Image (cartoon, rainbow, N blue to C red; front, top):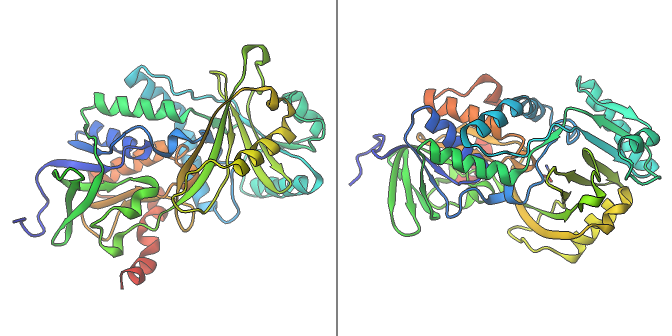
Length: 391
Ligand code: GLY
């Protein structure tokens, strides 16, 4: 029989989900001396295995998301020291590349759209320079002759998400985090507080604080009271990986994003010779099929911007699921259920938001306080909708 309402014995912190968000939370918690465990059948995987790893706070700016922009910028500023700290702790390189981004337009309508985005960026005080098509090609000679101009954003960089996941996993192991390589079958609640997790193999784990960081799966974990179930849904993204043979290097020197007939495509060249092309954005539930149509559209649009890509070997096609939230921003920190915290719903910005998420969650887990800059991102902003969902 569980004692009603008392914080349980066991670990201090139990993180459900071993993707980059769960791992950074666990790493930071362990660094602060908290006994920490992670539940995941395959930690270090998740959506980051598919993601391109753009740190594109400025070029991926969306209208109406100015609040999220502040968090994105706060995390982008942390990246150099975060990457250095993680590499120092693990000896593993993250492929962090401060190379900048060029966002280009294909036709005159695309140019008008990009001009609008530029005006919006400048109105927010962001650093972004409009340059002519000719200057775009001077920077990136592989661009198509028809490119109509673009935005040079020297502050939007990239990291390799697979390396990031591997380094966070190693950092957690070195910091003493325990791993339960199984699925969380359900969250357990004792009286008025979260008490732990039962694994699929029946093992019951208890912890003082349970962090739900299961990405697109976060809303599916059983045992969650309806009024705290996070409104997270899967948003499918198909991504291609090509290889740049040595003879073609340097194919691109920075990330190239394009507005192509009103759609969006990006090409992310890594130092290891990989070129990532992405991504579709599809509301198709749990479907992760790589489709001929998805691959065709990505290659067609990427080829219109950079015709030479058709010469490159295509090495991988994958589809992942972004954890979408109603306002495209993450849910961080406490919930209405004591002992249950969220670090989920990062949608398009999981890789970018990894450093700041670690800092926010460390502060919440150690002090119970959400830092001021993160208060707009607690799940309290959905409280009314969650109450209605619970009725
Ligand atoms: N941030 C890139 C994407 O979600 O496709």
